Image (cartoon, rainbow, N blue to C red; front, side, top):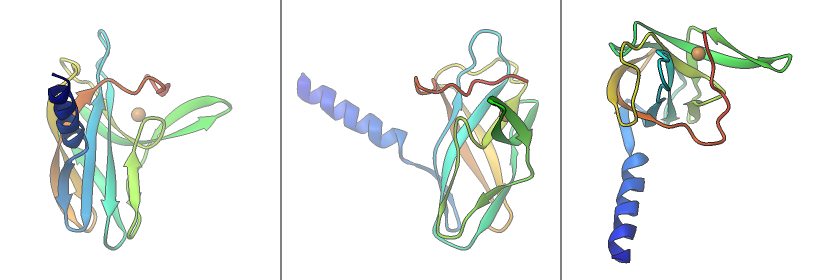
Amino acid sequence: MKKITLLLAATFAATAFAQDAKIGAITIDHAWARVTPGAVKNSAAFMSFDNKGAADKLIGVTGDVAKEIQIHSMITEAGVMKMREVNALDIPANGKAEFKPGGYHVMLIGIPDGLKEGTKFPLKLKFEKAGEVTVQVTAEKPPAQDHSEHKH
Ligand SMILES: [Cu+2]
């Protein structure tokens, strides 16, 4: 019995961190979105980018999951976290970039049915040089230490 449990755990870990999409020299990993508690209709999506090529920019995110999708930065001003819409996320040459709780994120505004744990939806990512790719995003509960919950 113990053996089976370990095997399942290993399979889950491999799935959770598998590469989600690739375009040109850019690999997109672990695309997830925060589940929406109660009647909340806004959420944020997160993912990481691993670039093995020249510098690029993520200049657009589109999808049907929400009425409006924006790229946001998050800064702390006088101890208060504030979000701001930005035009792009820079992806450095031979480097990494990340949408993560408390930092840059994909803002999902107006999700008709909210997001339950395990809900999957596509987002189309547009890069300035690499072009467009669709990534499957899975709704997950945020890590316990995440205090970046924010409201519009
Ligand atoms: Cu935001």
